[in-house]
Length: 304
Ligand code: NCD
Image (cartoon, rainbow, N blue to C red; front, top):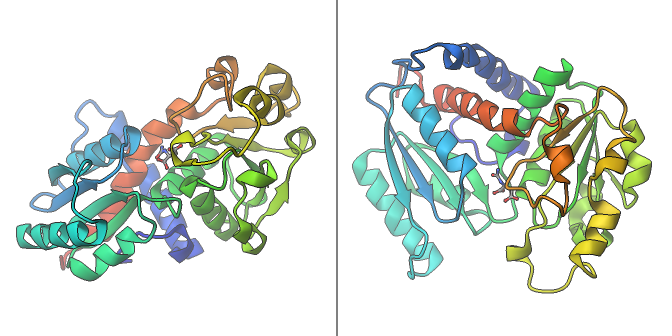
């Protein structure tokens, strides 16, 4: 493994290695001194061309816990045309000797291009509506932690699939790991290509919920919408929101997930988000250990 750009690039063994490594590293996070010397002398650059809270902070925490030098570059607001500014930035990073570049970019495919321009490893922290592989890994980690397995798990991913890199990465990774995914959304919020994804599709949340072991709610990404995809927020919520009544349809061991940021009251009610069966806060904590594992496996080797 040189880069982590798409969840679809991971074999079953590679994905499990990341999850198992994260499990070992999680023990470090429980100690009072959280630091390991593993990446001492290595440089990790966080290159964020788009807003982020959890992902940026957790990549930074992950690199620091492994003793890497961290450079945070927040490129938002640059007026240079995207391709050019990305290439120029890449050449600068190259000159600084970055061992790993973590990139979030509004253009799908940006991490892939970056990988041609830098010598270090590229980790995709979300590119447009394309992929977000470390999110899928931390989600799989959280499911395995709560439910003890991934093989055969029934996972419903609900909401704005069209704009969601989280959904795509999760579908690809979960298929590799043997879970059964059903996407649930209004037809307007499903990509045309979904027929070729390794999953089922349903428009009926109430029919899917009783069978699900995991319900992953997605944010309605209003900032990526330039047209009306549903009649009103209220109507969306009524058909596709997870409120108390719908939550009651889940079986007793089922868990509720959300990658954040949440629109409380729209796709998920506050009560459900804060319930003991919600993993939303755990997902954030697991994000640090899973990203530690990814960095360690990509740039922690002897021959770097
Ligand atoms: C997601 C993202 O940015 O892709 N958030 C995250 O990384 N935790 C999902 C979203 O923005 O809704």
